[in-house]
Image (cartoon, rainbow, N blue to C red; front, top):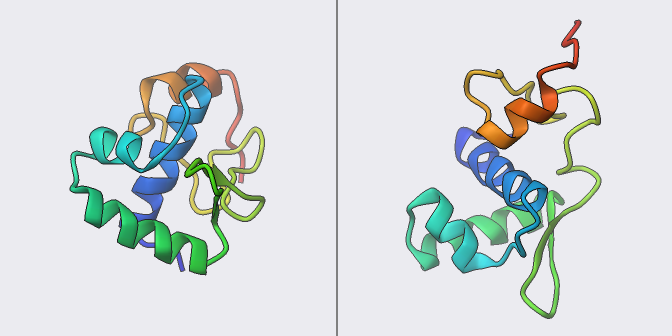
Length: 99
């Protein structure tokens, strides 16, 4: 099950990736305004649930299960365009979100 907190982390990872930023724990802490220990705990849960991979160089990557379905908001939930990060909204604005 994807909780709101997990979804927030997945969205932050996706947004940082889409902006060409290397995603590491401090990146997420800054983007989400949370403490580094909170990020560590969340990443542990996301890794346990098979949504992310944390590489030896500390980079955080969304894996297949954690990555949005191309052209739809996401497989964890459809991103409402008014709640999506601005960079994602621009990329998704021309996509039809049919049921």
